[in-house]
Length: 307
Picture (spheres, rainbow, N blue to C red):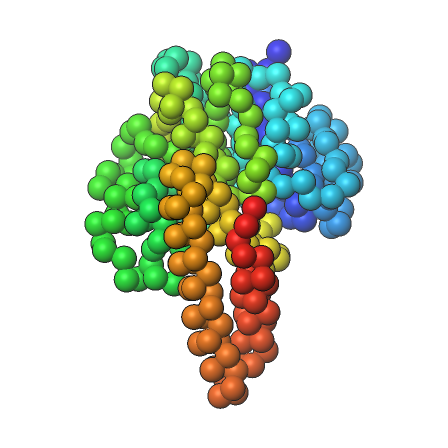
């Protein structure tokens, strides 16, 4: 019986997936594990690569893209490990990261979630731990208003008041690499499939915390993350999914008024940016880029950011 189930949801990043799988297998000799890949309708040969090069991997091949939470839940349904690690395909496991996370969780039975330290490809620390967002945070974070945000507001959200190398309890960790205890999952349930992608790990960690489980950032375990290599393939969809999920999270935990305020402010951001991009297009500045952005932002506005 595996101790750890490594669950990877993939969409059209075959070469990164190969490197990810190689890193998991190369650094897993001390942890009995199983590897589950859920391929979300890739057209780049990802599924065939897994079948041919990694016959030990359990592959679930979806005919289309079901979204990140739904695909992870397919993997959770067949996973047998005492712990489940949600791992992005654009990651590489470093050293004894898997063993370190399992050993820490074994030693701390009240910990429901462990998030490793994520590194950028150049070795610098990538922000991966957070406090729960407030409405004020959401109005600035990941919008064009972010440079105008009060410094303390986002510093608190990104936990910049704590050292990167300190083991610490946090509100939530990003889903590029998130290990959850089987017992805790059985208590709080699977990921919320109402999120297509983005904010699902925030929601999940909030449910773990509500149920009394600790969420811990563990910098002694390190994983390299190449950031957004699947989602960057479809720019309009990335904008729509990110912002729609943000609004949905606030509707779920802060109520319809907060969600509606957030939705309208975000849509106003995109309308303002369309005006700026349109002006630059009229002036003849990088017209192809401006046209691409105008098309993407118009699709966001047409969506209304409604689930």
